Length: 98
Image (cartoon, rainbow, N blue to C red; front, side, top):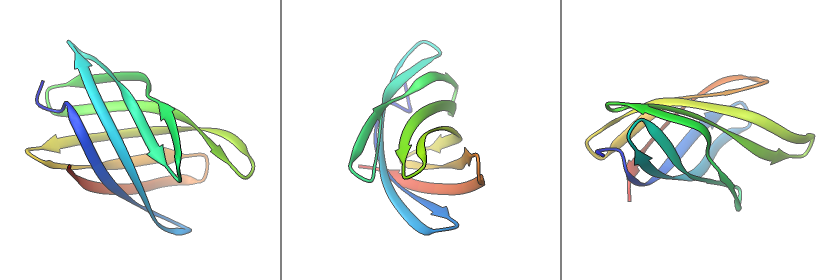
């Protein structure tokens, strides 16, 4: 599928810009893969894809414990963008295929 691949992303958070990497693999409408943020690689959970739109969640380790973080976005060619929803509010992200 068109969104399969590896993407370097930049999330604009209240704590500043956070770099990360997303690895996507699709099987029909199911999205699997991994998220690498701050050196911790976690599995994509509950991922799905519809055309060039995707959504998934991860359980990311933070100083206050593991938090559920939801991603929703689109892939346009080699560009990726969207929003990350955390308990602290949404943050935009953008990036490109590696």
